[in-house]
Image (tube, rainbow over all chains, first blue to last red; front, top):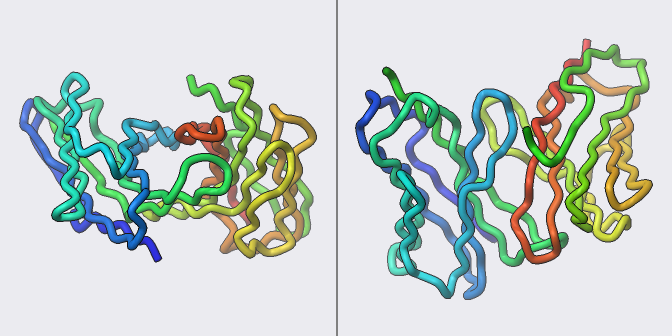
Length: 116
Length: 111
């Protein structure tokens, strides 16, 4: 069975601080996909990134960066110079495939509050 | 604005009512999903439709009845719900090999 652990439940930072959201996953499969989604108070889940198990390259997109390490089964997410608009719940998720017959296993989510 | 549109945004209903939630997308996605999300919890998968056919039912009670009349539209028919069914109901869609895109959700309250 698959499992995603987000040990941090709530994080509060002051604007412009850097913050790292941790994600640890468990699966026995060699092919899998990892995701991060953002859920602002409006409710919509916003897709941020997908990474497959064969691609350990780190990725940077603006103020966002992701560090995928298979050796530690982690897929951490860093926000640089945080802004108030980054306040949201962030979910890490795992699936064994993509598309209609693949289920997303979500972590419990991390509530990030960025104070002005 | 999201590309997956859910209506209504809010719904309050009694336990004896019948209502429907609607989800629409025009991105040509052939997979559509219903999730239920309780407060401070992650989304839980309920149903998956692939090419308008039900492919996954996560043992959801029969008081929830999904319907996919065409490739752009997904409905969730509700009947005789219980107070514990109060939650945010999220719809998502995807191409077969692409990440899921979610709507804003319908906040459902059962009186």
